[in-house]
Length: 151
Figure 1 (spheres, rainbow, N blue to C red):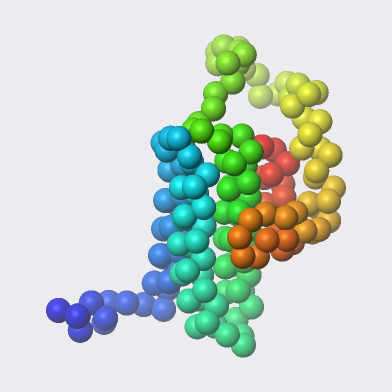
Figure 2: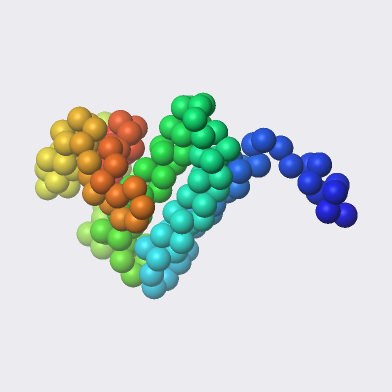
């Protein structure tokens, strides 16, 4: 019955649905041949629900808008990563070493660490980093910038 279903809805339904779409986007690791398209679809789906949150909290509740902005920035960063490094599916390093010999206390190889280190100062300063879709060029939250620096 539609009335019972409507009664079960809460003020947090749009948040739950936005988060669900964002989490579903993490399944890109199982998608071939175009995981970027898959992630991009979930960026849009999560943003659909985030826009409902923005409208519901128009003119107030800055924390709600900040949550929506952070979710979108995180998903756009994931999309940039997937499009840059996994264009046809999950890519593994063919020169990778034995997992048993991995030591997390050892520094990352210089060639792998050089590229993210060069991009980190602009991102850490909150400068626009581009991106795709609506909101492209928006400042990246510090936590997202830190995540991007490590991938």
